[in-house]
Every structure is written in structure tokens, then in C-alpha cells.
Length: 265
Ligand code: DGL
Image 1 (cartoon, rainbow, N blue to C red):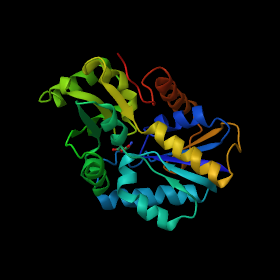
Image 2 (image 1 turned 90 degrees about the horizontal axis):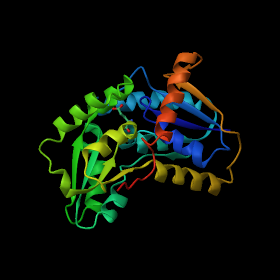
Image 3 (image 1 turned 135 degrees about the vertical axis):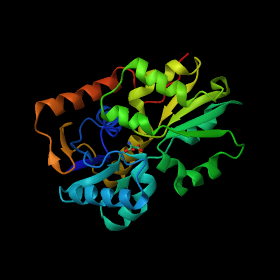
């Protein structure tokens, strides 16, 4: 049986990339909710509806586990979908815990969607791990829009990031947390803005480790050969153009806009 991956759009490909690397002998089904992307500035109710529709579809495809490769969908709906479906469900969480541990006197800056940052799941996480008040956060919803438009132009992205960060003293930060699965595609741009040595951390590695542990505990590991079938809001992707674009994004992660914890400098 296959493992389902779900995101509002292409962001979850950054997590799928990590899964293909660490669990190459599984088969995958990737669902991008293109008809409804972006999620991050929708209401809770709208996001819940979208998530249930997508997961209903994946449930009908007989998956052995689901990765909600979307921080926003996880924040809003993970508890509800876990109640409804029998298969195990792994969610995403901004990697604040490892970031706080790594900074040694400096601060942590979390980037995510507005919905992720205002949800009780994130506030609860901060209450639990940010006991010394070291964490700041900033919504960067437009990065989702840029990614969906395949807008990765250096000048455009740097000027957006500089504008959003103009009131921040970047030297104060020892780590940046990418709390949205679309953001690893901009890792090189973010790296360029922050001082050398700033760690850029995402939750992809931890999520795939959770998936691996869970499959091992079920005795359901290594059941395939790395085949991926892609769906866009319920329709199977068959055209070469979209397939090419997805492969390009997977390669982009491979080329250093990576999905693993990274400490340059
Ligand atoms: N990739 C998603 C996340 O991790 C959602 C982005 C969006 O659709 O706004 O939050």
C-alpha cells in the first residue's frame, strides 16, 4: 500500500523529497489542493472543509498512512481528521524546539502562514518551549503565492524579504525556522539575507523520521519502489508539463534549497 502526502499545493513536495531520500522503497501518492491554494489566509472553517475533502479522496485510494505535509492544515484540522480516519496520520510542526536549543544566547525567528501563527497549536508550542522568551515570528504568506507561481527570481524574492524584515535586526538571530512547507524553496534567498552562520531549520527531517518510526512500529516498511502518483485536487496529473514542473521542484530542493537542517558558515 502507498503513503499519502497532502498539501495545499506544491509545498509538500519539499517533504516528499525528504521521504524519497529516506524511504526510497515506499510508493507515494501526492495530493496538491490546487483548486484551493493558498490556505494560509483562509478562515478555519474553509481550511477544514478543504482538508476533509482532500483526505476523503486519499482515504478512497487505500493508503497505509498519511502525511499532512502542510503546517497550516495540521494546525487547523489534524485532531479532527485523526478522529475520522483509521490510518495513521503524521502532521507538521514548526521546528521551534531544535531551533531554541541550537541558538546559544541569540534569538529565533519563525516564518509561517498567518493561520499557523495564530492557531492554538503554535501558541501552545511556544508556551512549552520558549520559556526564556527568545522566539519572534512573522507571517510570510506571499512566499506561498510566489512558489505557486514558480516565481523564484532572486531580485523579486530578496526585495520582498527585505521589505518584510526591514524592522528586524537580523544579527540578533541564531536560527530561522521555516514553518511552512513552501518556504524551503526559498532557502537560498533567506540564507542570503541573514548573516553567515544563521541556522535555517525546517520540520521536514523530523516529520519523515516520525513517518519512518511509525511504519516500523506497524511492521509496514519497504513495500514499494519509490513510485509517486500525483493528483491536483482529485485529478490525476498525466500531462508532461506539470510532471516536469514537479520534478523541477524536487530537483530544486536537491540543489540546496534543501529540506534538511542546515547550518552554513
Ligand atoms: N504549505 C502550507 C504550510 O505549510 C500552506 C501554505 C498555504 O497554502 O498558505 O503551511
